Image (cartoon, rainbow, N blue to C red):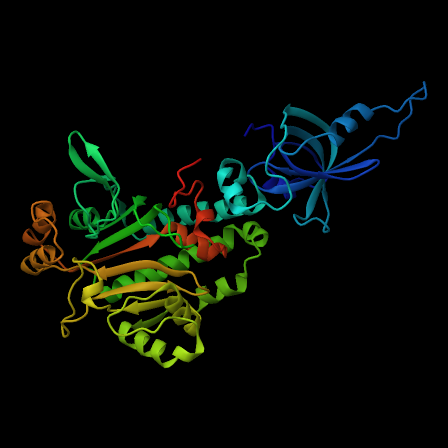
Length: 446
């Protein structure tokens, strides 16, 4: 933005002063000799008030009416430069408003499709490039941006190095067939599902690393928790056991919550997020529950909630996760899942052959899993055997096995789904609104 234009978010520091704002008209109301403009400039939404001049010149004509008539005719999303005096006004949601002294139309907007009336989700998603301008979507993106900023802040302060893994890979780290395949100069390649294996190599080089990038899952899912393209933050830490990793995960999520509470009060207010709940998650320790105990809890409470019956060895569905996290009332780690339902690279439990050393962090209020992590297997022969058990190519993973041949150490890591955390912290109900341009089953536009 030009240095001559004041950002709306900063008007509170200019009460009583004449300022100039460049932005768009998100809505307009008023009648007679007054017009109310809802303005936005990318930092916030703000009300400007224009009054029809009362001055009569020597010829008996009203002066200044031409500009007022222009204001009265402004259409939604017209780009304008507005000059006026900042006033404090507690009736305004923002707490301030602008008495207009001048206005210039920069770019007209004709027949803007997203009007203040209600629209269907498909229509809004088809017009996502415009829907992003709305008050709620703007607030969600502000929360997302702060979470990204706070992520770099946290890991930089903790001495991590950012590592950038490839997006094109020759194999499937999670051992699934749900991959997006492409041609790579005559040989098959896949869009990455995770940067974890490369991050493990980075941890053995630098000690503590984190990746932050897009990942892709060709899951044919239509739930409110799934995207086919999403962003993951995946730290890996050498010489770190599982319990220490859980401490890092809890500290990281609390850092994100604290940052959003501090920096995004306006956005949280727009979203009507219950900040007392966020403060509770910040103040109270996260719960740690074994998979065994979680199964027993679900079986014991089966008559009190609406979820499918579950037995030991089953993976949790969304209703199970919702019940568990709401039961404890804070983000909850579920620890040591059955080996049969987890990935090949997880370290086996030292005293049990049926579980691995891992945990999923389940967010309360029905938001489900936001982190999956584990201590990684370090024994070469065990890992090679698990690769074969999962039907994976030893040739494709020779480089990964090498990490266990040349100075292997205990190490742990986890992956946090950015969009799921945005949804959770913002209090939004669907993950499609947590990313600027979502990719879901049957949606590739805009």
